[in-house]
Amino acid sequence: MDERELQELVERISLHIFHKPFRHRALFNDRLKTTGGRYLLSTHNIELNRKYYEQHGEEELIQVIKHELCHYHLHLEGKGYRHRDRDFRELLQKVQAPRFCKPVVLAKTGKKYYYECTSCHYTYVRKRAMDTNRYVCGCCRGKLKKIKREC
Image (cartoon, rainbow, N blue to C red; front, side, top):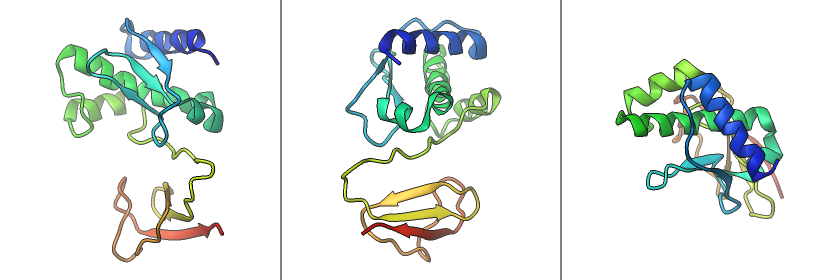
């Protein structure tokens, strides 16, 4: 997928799901490492992680685009666009967009420890070991379990 196709995809999702036009730029930012995308408040552009698209496919990229468009449309309307705001959470539920994206697996980073939430099955990748009795899942507060360790 190139930048032109990405722009068309974001415009199409904005019209079909939000019933509002997307009038700014959507582009890939290869410097993004750990997130699926971000909305820039100053320019109103949306940047997306190309590696996320390559690893998880178009369906997951669409979920990230819906999440970022929630930030975009709420910010332009002057409503609560932050993750903690009620307007944002309600719009996420309305358009069935995720609050968090799946983690991007980075090659050659030295990350060694993998943990999974027993409730929502969200996967955490860490460089250092963590005490599963002390920490809980950031998404649902569920119990974490160690699932794999690379050498």
